[in-house]
Length: 467
Ligand code: PMP
Image (tube, rainbow, N blue to C red):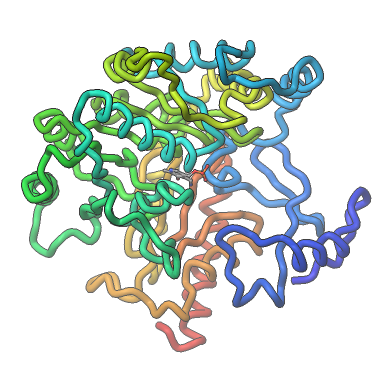
């Protein structure tokens, strides 16, 4: 794994060593890291990235579900450089603002569902969720309902890794050896159609999940519950598409119980499902709050945003106590360079009709990925548009998993990478969440690579006695 090729501009051998000695990587497996270190990604262009050895790959994960407009957009770089040289940073506290942050807030209000017209900025998805929960608690405190504190989330949800966002997260392995704020969060079942209880139709499964929600409310008491938070399609937890009508019915239960609905659209917003926001356009729901990050700036700069309804803003944005100040926010809330990147990114999404591309190419990607179901390990192919996943199993009939040591997700990803495609292994899953500029031609190339990679994986699993 040690890089052997030195790119002209970088001393990659020395970088590899420095990285191994000093960089504590997020979500990194130390059982291999100390030996192998990391691959350095050094260059990128369009749908491609290149490593320090000069290998070029099709990016099948948009960086980390975020580079929606693709890599190497010089005009975003230019917009950032222009802003950085004109006015790189100044506070947005205490009635100060900057042009890109103001402009972007208005643009987000225009793109979001009609009732969401107010924007609170953060630095990414975790901080957006964290700030949201604080604002929700503040809202109920102001309404004289200080007991409404508990947040209902779901098993296998991913909401980030600040203390609060990690507590909302329901992926058990993400919190191994960490603590969580359990007094604030209750996890419901995730909506997993593939692994729903035996003999239940999808309609019955939806009834079952909604009933579980109602039962939890009855048990905890609506007076103690502030909000329900959900990703419209669960991402890192396995690209789980809920049964038809699920989110709308969950919203109805929220409304009936004075519980706020928070949509975590960190992955689904900005085109991944073919619309700027999925909550209303795809799922016919009107959340009280939508959180976004990632595709908001296509990853060119860190940025998160919480979009808040007029109704909530009326309470949050009203002076209540004498000299009352909304005392929360980050140094980089509304960072001018990040907001300039986001504005240019949105301009590109609109100008190049990228949502339309996703609506056109997305169903083709789904259809072609499904053709891979004949491979021995592919138990399920699921997702929607540019948010897809393969679930690998040992036995398709029983849906039993391969042992963890088989590292099937890693094997598929490594075989794909050897053939020029980066996809993401998450346990026994492989996630495909590409830049939104993939064409049908890209899809054809990707399917050819995955077809070979899956065949090679089956062969290697057989060779090692796992199949
Ligand atoms: N929410 C969701 C749905 C996410 O997928 C992620 C990141 N993958 C986050 C929140 C956290 O975002 P960040 O890593 O930018 O803090």
